Amino acid sequence: MSDGFASLQVQHGYVPGTPQNAVATPIYQTTAYEFASLQDAADLFALRKSGNLYSRNANPTQLVFEERVAALEGGRAAVAVASGQAAVAIALLALAKHGEHIVAARQLYGGTVDLFQETFADWGIEVTFVDQDDLDAWRDAARPTTRAFFAESVTNPTAQVLDVRAVADIAHAAGVPLVIDNTVATPYLQRPGEFGADIVVHSATKYIGGHGTSMGGVVVDIGSFDFGAQPERWPQLTRPYARIKDVVLWERFGPSGQAFAVLLKTKYVHDLGPSLSPFNAFQLLQGIETLDLRIAKHSASALTVATFLAGHPEVAAVHHPGAPGNPGAAAARTYLPKGAPAVFSFDLATTGDPDADRDRVHRFVEALRLVKLVANIGDARTLVAHPASMTHSHLTDRQFAEAGISRTTIRLSIGLEDPADIIADIAQALVAAAPVTDPDIVEVVS
Ligand SMILES: *Cc1c(COP(=O)(O)O)cnc(C)c1O
Image (cartoon, rainbow, N blue to C red; front, top):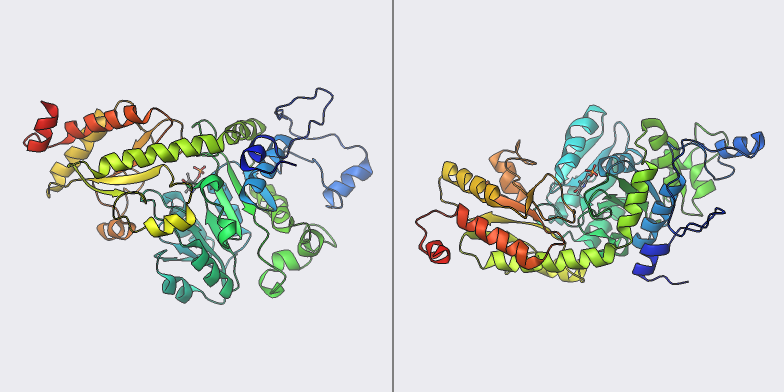
């Protein structure tokens, strides 16, 4: 069987099972499935048998998507849901409950920070945030009640590269799995499981779908974490499963690598209902068929744009691992050998006057034409955002400093257009944003 990345992304997981012999995975737009017999139904409900039951838990289009993502991440099982936010939430809810604790990187997607600081806090799950590069802080934050470590492999908006191996080792010494959000890198640029991550989550809304059309999320169980080693810590897997008599998930499904996925589907997706629609599963599958081609181009174009920005007099800093002097360069050689992701940011040179800086940022963003002002990343189109006005608008100055950004930081998500056109659009917007008295820029204009 061909198991190259591209072969997997186009074919894995789908066997035409219908008399129509459709070569593409059909959209199975159905809420439920006809049981062969009452015995068949009873076996499915009791988890004695696996199969289609009701589309809140899964639909057949989604199952192909799950198998394909699991294969691309080198995992044993995957669970797809309606959004990346749902994927992060259920992966962690399945590990930590009321009175338990999570250690997380401080450099996280804003929606994840909201989930941890507010909703998890409401539910009695405490999260300690640490600087992801401070290994002692990770070590010191672990407690007897800790049930997971959580971080992003490459952060948004400043493209910081996590030392996955080091954080995984600390998590494992503390007896807990490392959960990695691999949305920005995608399995094409990095497979966190190869560096010790145990569970990988994605907002499939971004690069996996890749076209800015469809929400989705996925949790992949790499299968590396042994929940049986300290069974008293993981009663949800190692004690009889309350809702299905006589089943201990770790005994029944541990050997096949499905135990965590079965827990996610039969409890958290079942109870909370963040189901992926068959149509979105189809769109995400279509996106994934070109993942390597798209990411290679996204990554190369982003490096070209970052290099252009690094040499521009109106740019104070470029937060891209390939930019000159970036502190992530060494980590990128280990963790991103095929290239860096296409989400990164840069700082417009500051005037020293906050009002003038705000005006410059506005003029820059308003002048862009090809580059779209959108609260998203991972689209085929090039997108811009201003964190201080948008995703990070509620942060204090100290939190800005901790996040490594400023009020003139601009985030880019480089798309699939011609890189020369992207650069030309950014170049003219930098002219529009420049102080009119700047001699360098007057020269460019004339
Ligand atoms: C967008 C995003 C999420 C949330 O995903 P949705 O699909 O928008 O719910 C989580 N993590 C990262 C890194 C993201 O970029």
